[in-house]
Length: 284
Image 1 (cartoon, one colour):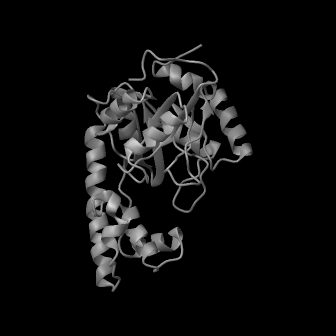
Image 2 (image 1 turned 45 degrees about the vertical axis):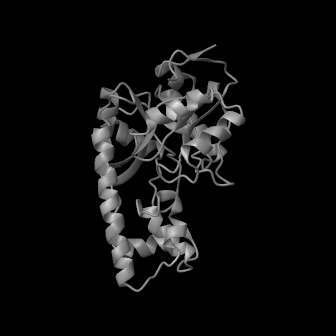
């Protein structure tokens, strides 16, 4: 629904956000209301491993005169290294990503339920479970739900400690191969970029320019997410130079989960000109 759109260089965009369809804190309607009221010109909702709601989110956007680019953040693996991929511009009704996302979501749910059962066996109790998981319809869906339960019931002081507990209880990350995800996206008419390559938290892979070279020698990535809240100004300059050197697309995203400190960001469309033009959006 974002095709045939023309933006000015100063148009406001954000190409990386999440809703309660994955691990965001706002339902799609609430997020889109906020974005429309704030005057965004183009956005992409990139829920983790979900393409089944892209068309409905685009419809919600159209109802608010808000242009929504088809997007998803795929959980992938490259030789044991995690690699979240931002995939844009695919057909939301007819694409090859659906079977891959269905596989990831199924494996993730099976593991989440198994970890929860193990926590119960270890003596953890969660009397406030219905309240904590209300946004999921009181259902366990993803690993973060077990983390939320542990933290809300005072068993852990922070995310890292909760992650350690669920890992000891059998948590394993569910991913598809990066090559397979890129191939499926390209076959569906879209493009793939490495998400937040500069994140350094323990469970993320830091993509130095050397590692990017290694990945790109095997996989035809289209670009990298240059602008991300976790990227220092020095990293942004490094990734900008790398993208220019290798003629890669560059994206701009807040990675918003709708928390007070992770709200959407108005980036200038000019920063992602090549990406936007690749997916059929014109720039003045």
